Image 1 (cartoon, rainbow, N blue to C red):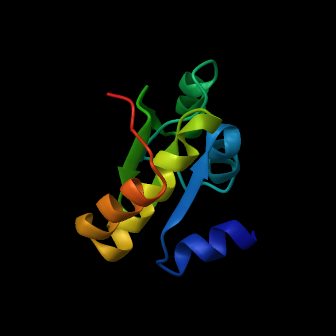
Image 2 (cartoon, rainbow, N blue to C red):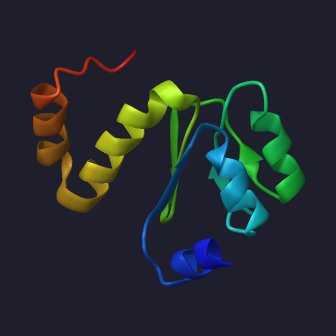
Amino acid sequence: EAVRKFYESGKIIASVCTGAFILAEAGILKGKKATSFHTVVNQLSGYGACPLKERVVVDGNVVTGAGISSSIDVGIKLVEIMMGREAAETVTQWVEYCPPS
């Protein structure tokens, strides 16, 4: 219930890996594009989500990441959403991250 209330407050909410199923159980992913760990991502459709096999998916104020290794990508995407592309690029360089192509 706390997760649902947080989402309904209009704040950005994010998950990584199978954490997407916490959002799905709360009804947050219904009608939204989302991703999760590659072996279970298609199961999101059972919650009314549109599963995508992508590293990071943004749909409105919901950000989902694929496997646990996508956590850096999700973090950088959150910086971009909240602070802009330039800040995200600065963080990417600062942590010496080379995103997969």
